[in-house]
Amino acid sequence: MRLGRDQIRRLMKERGWTNIQLAGHWGLALNYVSWLINHPLDRPRVYDDAFRGLLPRDQVEVALEGRHKRPQWTPRTQATEAMFPPGERYITENSALGLDEGTELEVVSMRRGAKGVQVTFRIASGEGEGDVIELDHPHQTNHLASDTRLH
Image (cartoon, rainbow, N blue to C red; front, side):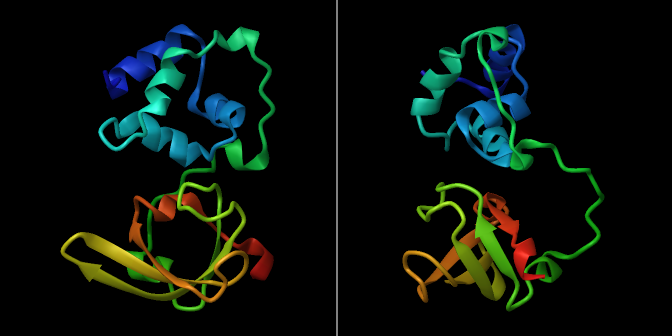
């Protein structure tokens, strides 16, 4: 039986976990942990078992990395089109897109369609270099980070 968002939040609260701590413990990006909690129908079933089996937080050592620290919130001031200009590079934060973590992607184009915004990327480095992929925004693009090494 799938766990709902409120059930997961209750389990995490009872066991002393925050989203950030869980992201660090499971080695996932913070936004992916949030997505897992908030999208029960799309969430892989293995995570229902993982949430049910969470140990009390005080029994687990968690080492947070820079990517697990909550970013400073700023209001959105850009249109989606401005977020993905052609040539802009991003890196994958995890393997949720079927690509290795750290794979560089370069924006080719962006379009609005019936299903929302689609961003087309060219794989700039790593396995599949040169291939073109299309990702839904914001669902799939949440697994990307701006590649600050290239700015």
